[in-house]
Length: 290
Image 1: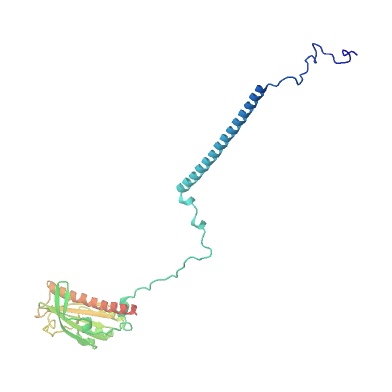
Image 2 (image 1 turned 90 degrees about the horizontal axis):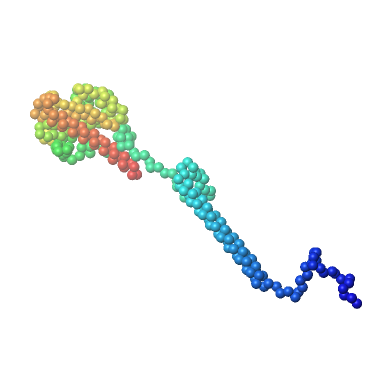
């Protein structure tokens, strides 16, 4: 038998010139290990790089969020009031459970003049000693001594000149008088009472220079202003008209230079006005406290 025929031909050239490698050749373990290590290093770098990028991305996102939040707050703080939410946008209490209070208002104060403007409301006791109490009157630094008191329902009998008819025409119901004096000067105050303020005002407006209350002497004050020229005044408040006549107790006429007489008459007229007003205040206070 011949082994040289029928088999493959091995020669020095051609595609099949390289002899096959059989299992008898040993692998290069060092090269394989180095290649494996290189692959592992590349894998680690990829993992590390990816983590760093992820961290950077998260950090940037947080930073953007913080900046966005701060910027929004700053913009809201600096935003004009017209751009801020209106109060209507604030949720209200739909159930109405909040406290509620009934509307209250204090009653208007009582007007003291109303109580002295008509006989229907001016019902407090009235007498000369109630309107002019005490034995002396102090006005500023001046002290006047009180003299005689008088009261009558026949008003014209305590008046002189044109005053009597005026009081009668306007239905005067009462005329009270009181006299005060100091240093030879005396003054009589006459307070005429009417049913209404309108009648008192009419009596005041009807009075002229000849409308004079009759002077009242007595209680240490001699006769005065019965024949001499004296100074007189006329006024009204509420349903009261009040008159003064002032002069010298020695019978001397009063002239424009006698300022002490003018001051005496003005002091008593002012005191009379205050007393009438206090009468209204007292009745208004009593009414309010009921």
